[in-house]
Image 1 (tube, rainbow, N blue to C red):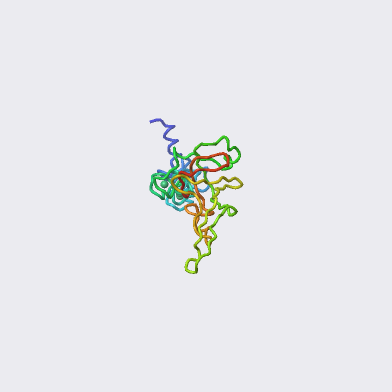
Image 2 (image 1 turned 90 degrees about the horizontal axis):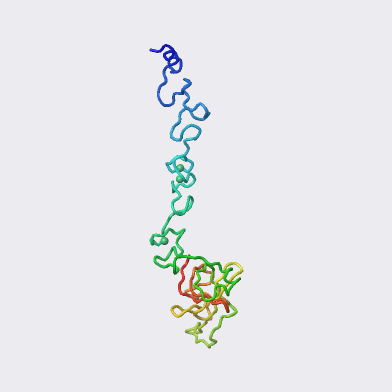
Length: 225
Ligand SMILES: [Ca+2]
Ligand SMILES: [Ca+2]
Ligand SMILES: [Ca+2]
């Protein structure tokens, strides 16, 4: 046996401490450079074994240490649920119509900004567009029959109104399509509540053919985003 190696071993191996956690320097500190740890633990020296969001996975073991419901970003990212509310296989965060299974804009979802349509209508003339906005009733354009209603039917009048979809300062009109009429119908008592299917102030995603003059969309389909 080599005399020198025997001497070194006798100096370096501390008495009463063996295995993980025993420092190579014989101090008993497995993490000599980490003042908070004596042993590597799960996360290793220099990284605390902390579970910040208390979901059972240590911060060093997961990609979403601040989201107690997720350990990986998944589709929607940390902090956002991957819920698929309508069960159509698309998570809500990537589903243009998250509440309507099977109802999607044509050709997948390609967003168009209403401001783009309003700023350059000729560029989009006769094209299929998909837009997101809020339905507004053009109150000035509301027309109602003006009948004398009998007491038993106080709201006998019929009303119609021009609808606009708005996003900030931009807005385009909605035009009646062949399939589903676009406009208000109801009575002069409650026409603003009877704007179906486009209730006033309802956020909506719709698609159809855009015409430039006047700026309007002939609606083919829509959903509540
Ligand atoms: Ca955690
Ligand atoms: Ca987590
Ligand atoms: Ca979905």
